[in-house]
Image 1 (cartoon, rainbow, N blue to C red):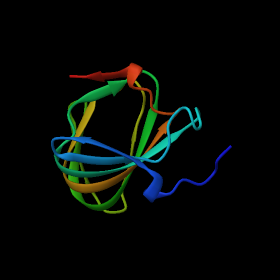
Image 2: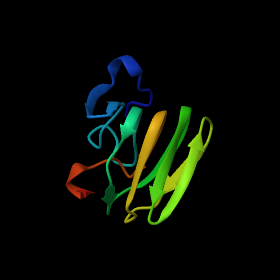
Image 3: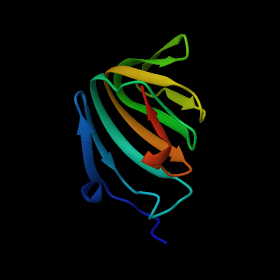
Length: 111
C-alpha cells in the first residue's frame, strides 16, 4: 500500500469558486482520502451518508454553515463535520480535508 502522496501527483478538480486537488481516492485506500481546496466564494451545501470530514484551515478566513449555526474560521482552525450533516462553507480560504472513510461521490447529496 502506498503511504505517501505528493501534491505534484494530486488530481485537480473544481467548480465555480473552488479549486481542488485530490491526493488519493478510495481505490488507493478505502479508509481515508485527502484533498486540498482553494476557496474564493462558496462551496455549495452538501451532505454525505458515508464519511466524517475533517477540515484544517491552512490560511485565510471564512465561515462554515452547519445546520443553523454559522461558524467563523481562520488559519489553524479545525472543523469536524459528522456524516449525515448538511453544511456549506465560504470565504477566501485554503483548506486541507480528510474524509473517513474515503470520499465516494455516490453518497454525496448536493442541495
